[in-house]
Image 1 (cartoon, rainbow, N blue to C red):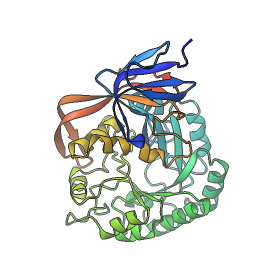
Image 2 (cartoon, one colour):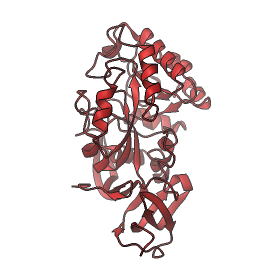
Image 3 (tube, rainbow, N blue to C red):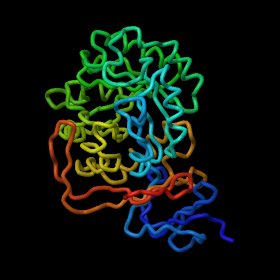
Image 4 (cartoon, rainbow, N blue to C red):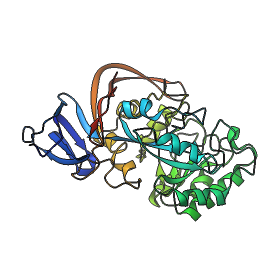
Length: 374
């Protein structure tokens, strides 16, 4: 009787957490990675052929919206994340203190592993405008909710766009900072078009806090109007602030990202901000967002690291984003398709690339997921 439940054979394994890029077979037993070994040395009753494909840890999307029944931005996690290669997602503030229970119930019915950031607004993000009422950002309720659900709530989220906060920007930002501090968790800030200079936002953030939409096309990007990365962005990175792509419908600019990369400022994490407004383009999914950074010249291993090991290190379950033995058996087979592919950013600018990553098979907790690539 074989010691392994499943062996993934003949693929090119890329595991940045282990510095691994080469032909290997991956064995799974009991829902865990059991071994990564030279091809042909592992036996199991069942195998999955990965010939011609990349084998990576399950992708981790640090910014998505999967409150399908409680937010106009929500999409179903299994259909839009898991079956497209994302085995773990972080819902970035779709729910607040009074709607978290509804989101938790919804997530219990999904196979995708989902953590969440709690919105500082009690109502979460049913639609835009969740901070227009100055009483909705509630510190005490946010802190209490996080304390009661620390296994799943990993941070606080605030959006500072004018259509979201109106005249309450300073109040919302201060309360979000306070809640994150009191709860002992990171704050993720959405800065797009905020009526506050980017420098002022960056100066307030602590080690572990996250700037999402870091390459958005508004003046509140890490790149200023002259095309130069803010000095404060480099300073924030040195003290431990993280920078996340968060593509979304309108929050990623090829030009801003290109200028930042040329100045040595790559994102810490590549995420899709997958939501109902971009799931059918321009973001599509995490592999598509990753493909845009291949187009911009980031090396394949660096792209994979920013969607596996790096976000995995921010989550409370040990072993996410790696294929090391003992880790949860979340694995994705990616086809690196060659051809002529048109990509669109959040400013509706178009670029043509020669390759695109597409998930063709997914293993979640040792089980092969149905419907991938259909």
